[in-house]
Length: 232
Image (tube, rainbow, N blue to C red; front, side, top):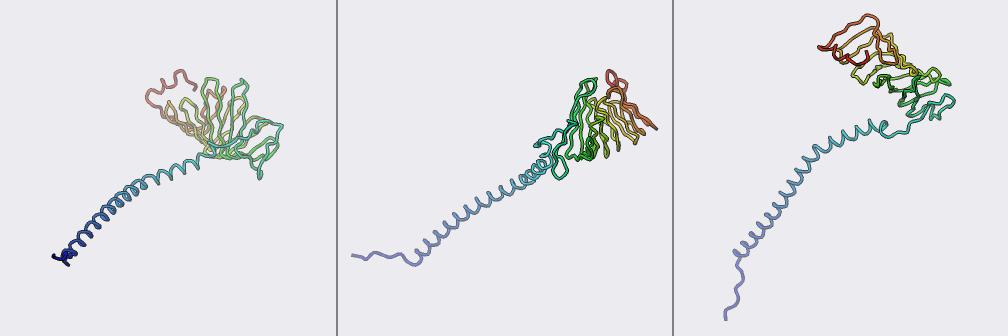
């Protein structure tokens, strides 16, 4: 009886080589899969990270406006509680002589006298007799509760809901009768065109704007129709 033959060196080497090739193929397949997954992840992060950064910045900027509790400073007999002398998110509101509402609010306020508050980044909204709304915006302001008035300064912007916008350095606003005036240069833009003047007065409960001083007016084509049925 012949003895069983043992694999020769060549056959053993061929088997080992085939096993090595199979191992390399498996490793290569896994490496390619990992490489493709890594590339997809890098590509995704390239767009996701900047987008997430923009969202975070937007939330930081908008957080005080979206999540805050306003402190009412409307009552002339009350002295609002302040932290380190400052009132966070103050709000002053009331109604004018014709019972139309107005509201003034700010990021910060400091009560400098019994009825007077310094405001940081004040804003305001007033309802006009015509049904239009006048919005106010400035860098700083001084609110007088006794006279129901506010002095605005620094990039003062008045926007009327008919599309008229005025920008000046300072303005005095009477909340009680919706009057306003400024003796500093003003630029205006609206359905009529563009205008620059030495100052302005707002009369008749906010429906009439009178520009004072040297005035330059550039009318848009058809501006006469833009004025039809609207306050002047």
